[in-house]
Amino acid sequence: MDTVLTKKTKNLKLKNFDPADTSPCKGGKAEAEERTDRLREELSSLQELIAASGRDKVLIVLQGMDTAGKDGTIRKVFTGVNPQGVNVASFKTPTRIEAGHDFLWRIHLRVPIGGEIVIFNRSHYEDVLYPVVHKTVDKKTIEKRYGHINEFEKMLTDEGTLILKFFLHIDRDEQTKRLRSRLETENKQWKLSAADIAEREFWKDYRKAYEKILTLTSTKYAPWHIVPANHKWYRDLYVMQALVDALKALKLKAPKPDYDPDSIEIK
Amino acid sequence: MDTVLTKKTKNLKLKNFDPADTSPCKGGKAEAEERTDRLREELSSLQELIAASGRDKVLIVLQGMDTAGKDGTIRKVFTGVNPQGVNVASFKTPTRIEAGHDFLWRIHLRVPIGGEIVIFNRSHYEDVLYPVVHKTVDKKTIEKRYGHINEFEKMLTDEGTLILKFFLHIDRDEQTKRLRSRLETENKQWKLSAADIAEREFWKDYRKAYEKILTLTSTKYAPWHIVPANHKWYRDLYVMQALVDALKALKLKAPKPDYDPDSIEIK
Image (cartoon, rainbow over all chains, first blue to last red; front, side, top):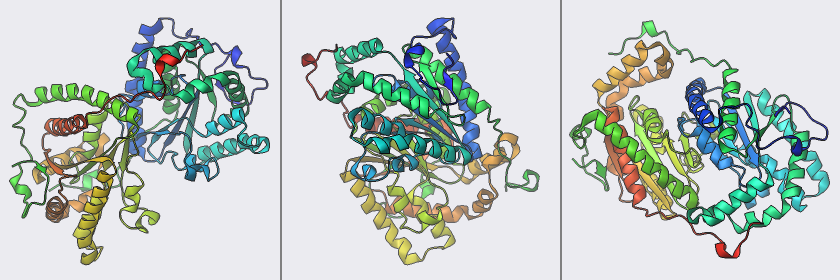
């Protein structure tokens, strides 16, 4: 199964995507880590060119079930890249002011400006997840949101933003393992909240909601990547490689000075 | 001279502070880099605790003459720290909307939220620099701004923000060297703008404006550090050490879970 979805796919089923796949990296964890480290150097150079341009905008959307590894992916892919020009926006339960606006309002405030890479740790896709599972928003409004998201992302793309969307795909057994590990490790316990544990009851509903998202919001200009994420090392390599490939395709160049260097003398 | 200013100092003169001082690091560049690397690991752990708390807020203000090394300090101190929870706000020439508000408006929008470290690359102090040197704002308004800045920073502190302000101190010869290097290195030329070269004519005026800032806005709750910055390796070590010391003093601890771990079973 191709993990890059560039258009609507009828009847997309997550069970057709193997969350434990690591086949493109035959050398296992050691090879993956080595490749990820090498790619990080490329990423650093590419990021420098983006910052220099002050023009290119890059938006990375990370979604996934609880414990799928959104925080870990950010840490592993971006630690080692100059934080100037890399910003992370984490979207939690909306505040009263945020919830008082349309669902794209708080998102729009945080999209990258020229020269920036912005990582969304959760995003506008949360507004077609929780409300779908818990029926807190009426169905008609929800149904329209998929189209609004596509139009919004189209507008961002037309205005010069490169959008990469990653769904970190784990299975329920892997979540069980990770939740248990958090529960059993004293200095990880705070990472787990009573609410997380309660939400786990809705695993199937979330999965269905994600299948609908992946079906309706995969576009040529803002494709979803279904990232096999049971193995953290493969997940990191996957995201890193996809990001570096996409940035390289921009064919970035260092900008020209706004003066004639030969005409200037520094006294 | 003590480089940490915790209160107003009458007749502060920058010539009394040696921009080339490296005396606290006898081992020179090699020792400094080794210490900086070691401290970065401490910083990483401390940053994790800040993010975990979701409560502590840290604001780092970087100011200095052109080429003093604001970008370099950010790159050197923070590359290697998890970018989640570390955000950089760069303040450039104000937009029409920004300029249409009071000078603290755009600043207030970018102060850290709980759990964040925010680095200001330039800041509200630009509003008592350019307008002072070029007389674009009337004197009476400018005079009041120092007090407004102090009150604003007091409020942030009282509401739980730790503020660290670094003035990266270089001398004119060092600036000459750095400007020439940018001019002569083809892939650095874009870092220099025609405006930078023009502003250099006002070196003395900027220096005087900085002396006034350092005099009037050094407070116990938001002290200025005058960082000897002629040597980049010492500048990085200085900022890193001051930051780690300040964060350690917060005595951060991992938060407690909001449930009883023994009462939960993950099925």
